Length: 110
Image (cartoon, rainbow, N blue to C red):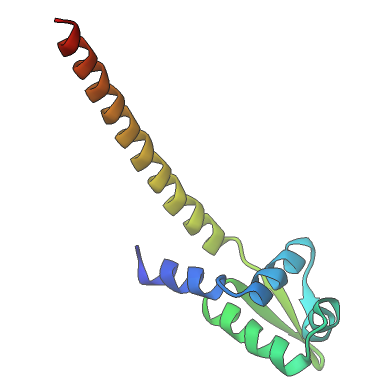
């Protein structure tokens, strides 16, 4: 697992940050909008957004005196590729197990 992927997964390991990602899936939002929707204090929201920003999960766009956060897709593509590799590994293991069990069955019949 790459260090970048590990950092991404760590950033997503917090419930509040996951909820922020869910909100940002629908539309870009300001810190205040995110805080209000999640019932969090603005400093707490900013702290979580900083973690997401450092992990590359969101990008921030300054608009006047507001900071608008946008969800980035690249980290989720990395997670998807990683999970697909795990899935393929499990399929390969199950295929080998199935082959082994079939061989055992044939050996017992002989």
